[in-house]
Structures are given as structure tokens and as C-alpha cells.
Image 1 (tube, rainbow, N blue to C red):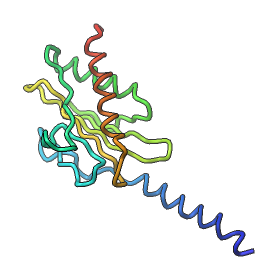
Image 2: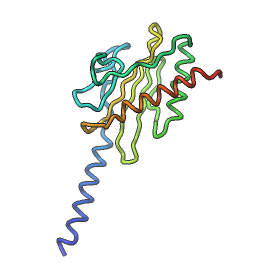
Image 3: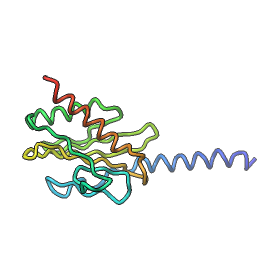
Image 4: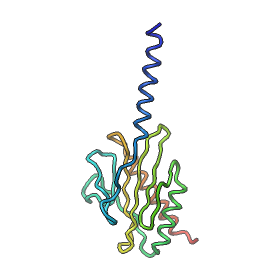
Length: 156
């Protein structure tokens, strides 16, 4: 009888432990200053437009040359509100934090820093837990970039 119950109970405990880990808390700090993200960890589950260009973590920032800061911010927020599994957690004049939750419960944090003078939006996307992300964060940023660019090209 004990053996019959052991496998299902052990499996349930392992799954519950895994789901609790998936719901870990967000980073305490996203930025070092008003213009700079905290760096990505050494794990390959993070991409940032502020990482060194020759790094595997580097991703291009979103560019809005020719558009106003207000139009760029509006396009970014619209792209985020339309994105699947996205939840806009915090918006400020130059900072936006969004979480993306997978169907298995994993949470990724994506932060944006609007840099008006450079006419770019810096981006950092990182998984909260785990080591590999199978390029999920990079693909997400590229998808958001495509949507952002399409919205900027569309007259309101």
C-alpha cells in the first residue's frame, strides 16, 4: 500500500516545489541609475541592450528616430498590452517593467528605459529562475521590436 501511494505523493511534492520556484520574486533592483540597467547575471537567460556589443547577451535597443518620445512610449505600451501572457507591472515616464508568465508558471521580467536624447529604448529581458532559457528572452525582445516598429509606422 505504501509503495502505491508513494509515487503519486512524491510526484505531487516535486511538482509543487517546482511551481513555487517558478513564482519567485522579481529582482530587487532593475537599474543602477536613471540611464543604466543592472547587468545580466552570468547565466545565459538574460539579454540586454546595455550588455557589451560583442557579448552573447547583447540585443539591439528599440529605436525611434523621427518619432517623438511620447509616440515611442505609446507604441511601446500598446505593444506590451497586446502581447500574450504579459502584465505591465510598473510604468513611469522613462521606465516600464513587464512580466511574462509561461503556461508552466515561469516568470520573466522585461524592463525598458526610454533614452530621449539617443532616441532609443533600452531593454533587458531575464528569466527569474533557471539557467538556460532556450533563447526565449531574445525571441521575445525581437517580437516586441517588430510590433513596436509596426506601431510606429502606423499613423494613429
